[in-house]
Length: 256
Ligand SMILES: [Zn+2]
Image (cartoon, rainbow, N blue to C red; front, side, top):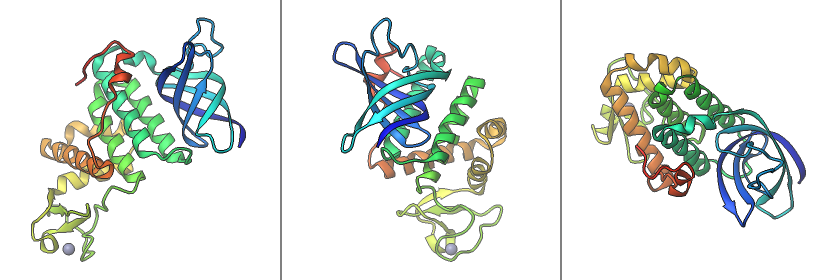
């Protein structure tokens, strides 16, 4: 409790009263933090443009016992990816990313790996916006892994046998991966190519994965996408939503 200083990534902002903002940040030290920035919408605000979405900042805030909202005291820009939000496609991509972080990360729970994932994914997409689809997949798979929802892909959960390079496997209703014999062919099918794609994600940087993306079979890319969507929806017990309120900040009505 008390004063905190940390690196943070602004995920989303809401207007509050006449001149204030509520800012949702992913912080390096303390996970997802929601704070009030008094006067942030005034023309000569001391925060300047630091509290725009997808800005990396040095954040100073004050927290009080028992209050979920912290009080933001200072924010300095380290680097900003706000300029990426010029196209509707990219707004959609970034809104989706921030939505998932807010949904998956429990508030005030430090997770350095998650901070690193978000930061590396944004960096990668800023370098190569055309690789956004591959980086989106990379981000989803890692987010599921860090949250404990990605099944083990090397061996069958039931008989512990390692999958060979060509055999098919099946995700059962508990989202565990089984061989054909143990699953009796029931569940969501996962090919060897898809298991390979998942392993490449988990052992490479987003740039390296995006570089290899065109070399994966179309079927494996589609299957990995379907699997990620299925696991995200079963973890959230609903479809991910991308907030309309968020999008209208950029004058965008619909996305994707
Ligand atoms: Zn088995």
